[in-house]
Amino acid sequence: MLDILIALFLFIGGAFALIGSIGLARLPDLFMRLHGPTKATTLGVGGILIASVLHFSSRGDGLSLHELLITLFLFITAPISAYLIARTMLHLRGDNKS
Image 1 (cartoon, helix red, strand yellow):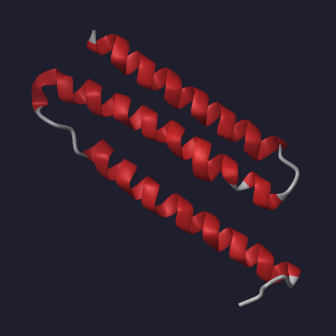
Image 2 (cartoon, rainbow, N blue to C red; image 1 turned 45 degrees about the vertical axis):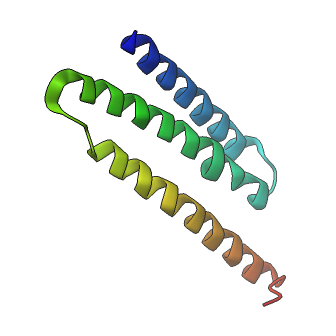
Image 3 (cartoon, rainbow, N blue to C red; image 1 turned 90 degrees about the vertical axis):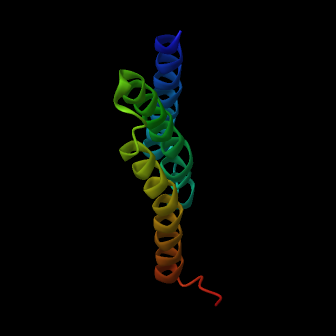
């Protein structure tokens, strides 16, 4: 049963990562391209890391915290980096209102 749950998280994470990567490659504008890595790909990597937590925690070594720390770091840094990229693009185009 646990293997099915791990496989489900891997499949969902892989699907989100694939959709985010396609969006990064196919969307026409930089601002639209930011949605790929910041939303879909972040959720994809998060799903894969949850599957990894479940797998390594089930082996009897206790709770695996390395993946949880990676997930936390990823969820904190992805929006910040997207914000900085968007602000830089606004600054370079001259649309900066603040």
